[in-house]
Length: 388
Image (cartoon, rainbow, N blue to C red; front, side):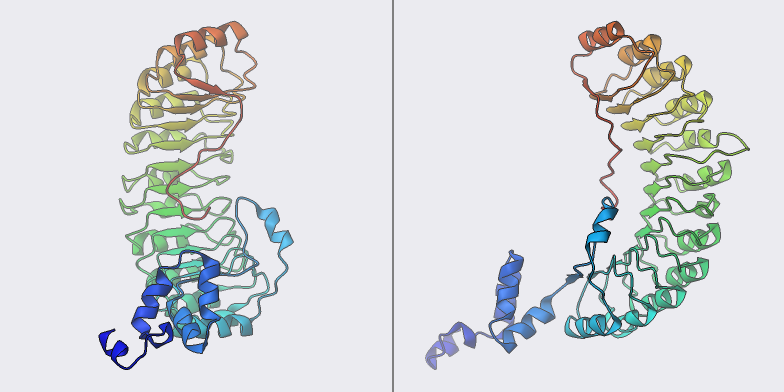
């Protein structure tokens, strides 16, 4: 800077690129960052070089799929190629909702995907195994990938991805109907840093593909899956599971497989919502075995009876949140068991329990004034999974 002042170059335009880069990175407001690039070609180049994330306008939120209907941007291969050539140091790329994007649109990732860590391909319906192989070839540093409703992806594509991207930590496979335990096994066996997997609505997965998974796996979301006992024990086989969602578990002619969860000693959040046929014996076994449970959703679990509620009250001493909405067999005696136990309970989600009398509810409130009873039915919210 002293040398610049000697020659009278005091304008900001004379600052070296590294100084301008520091200024650009200090800009928190997206509008300011865009304005920076509009100043001149040199500043635009600095903006392009330092851009780390890119999200298309057609992207939408999984929690609100209807937003997909309001986005009509048709992202073609040529658009993506130009942008990847312009922003060559991206670490995060979201293409979710780009329904017309096909495999050829991903070819530039071979050249410009070396820094990419997060990739979202939700509802990219035309992307197939070949497209996923292009991702695998160019994005070796990938840690997060979401393939929600990528209906063209099969076990072969997942195998290719798992072979090349060994650093994967977060993988969303929900609604990938062609993925089975074979592809899941390739993922869990090769990616030993895996922390979170979503297999919700994957009808071909029983859970056995998790067998022998790494202890790093702490989160599994398996809503509306056809899990069996071997699959459930496979999910917890790594010993690190803290969050497990098996809500809306499909009925099995082999009986209730959920008692296998009782061996998961590290479990903190468990979602059984709408597991209508979960056996009372499974509830007792889990209450006895999962001593670290902090939140348990038992909404619409109609087979939980008095001995089950007594087990929850007696053994779940770390439980802070309990969901019992519309539990058909929760009665006054069951509520008393929860009142006399669950010493750490702070929130009880309860409505539609037709066998609980107003008097029993008032007694509960008087004895446990520190417990907030909420009638609204909410889902278990995980702090772990990034695809929200």
